Image (cartoon, rainbow, N blue to C red; front, top):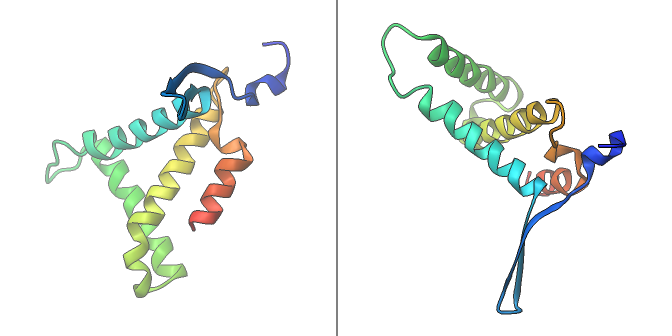
Length: 124
């Protein structure tokens, strides 16, 4: 890496051409987005796998995150916003984990590109 700007380059890692109709390439952005999704699944499901009455640290952290997002939804939207809670929680976790991957040295931040930001704004 010769320049700090090279961190934001999207690089093809593998290129697949299916019958000259579909061009599918695996880039560093798609690889990091896949890592973010897998990290969210690990955080939510495997940390709460052995749920107990007396909370473990990992179960406590997941429940604290749920209560934090639910409190934000309750204060900002009200009781009508509870139907949007899963979407807001998923969006929050996705942006959080993508930015956490971005601050690791020599890694790639998917949320630094305008297409990801545009997709989030169009989706909401």
